[in-house]
Length: 54
Image (cartoon, rainbow, N blue to C red):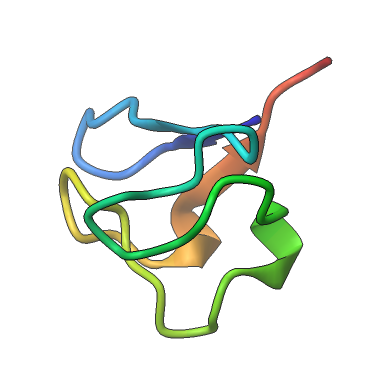
């Protein structure tokens, strides 16, 4: 899982769930997200995400 570090957001991207708002299907790894994908909560780019420990 990956957590957004932008604007005190805290959104967690879970590959198992995907991103319905961004039309990203479940099972999509963070590394496979399009380069222009944005956080569905605050709009931060992928570079603002940090990998969480498993």
